[in-house]
Image (cartoon, rainbow over all chains, first blue to last red):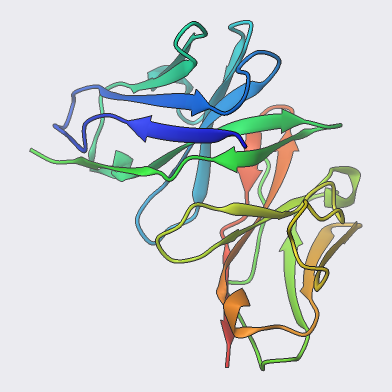
Length: 119
Length: 107
């Protein structure tokens, strides 16, 4: 059973960089896509971007200028960096495995971590 | 960018059938996925590729997709099905696209 666990600071100051890491266990990181998805409190889900095991990335156009997703296959981890954060970036951040079967969907999710942007 | 629209809320009586819709331009030409999210929990995939059920998902969950609308149907709805439900599709430009979510109330 694949398990994902997010980790990182729960509080980030405005204009600074949000950094989170997702650790994958119970399965291989190779051959799969790995995504970050966020959910503002009481709101819907927003896909942030993915990284393929070979390092190829794709980001949501609305966040592309501020997002970087990277991968450390030896540690079975992938990471999110979101720069120049504002209060609008306050959200639960989920990491997920993005599966390809004719198209892409999310079959395993982490428990999520709340990141608050505040001074 | 591609958008998916869901009703904010749906109510159903226990044992009845709940239908949650998801609308998007030519959505029937894409595959649709459905996730259930209970309070304080992560989303769980309940329908993939329009109508398939992952292992462990009860048979009362089913899905369809045609034209501009995909539908999640819960037959014989139980109190435990009370949750938020999100549809999702993949767009070549936008990437992962989610509907705004539907709160299912069982009363």
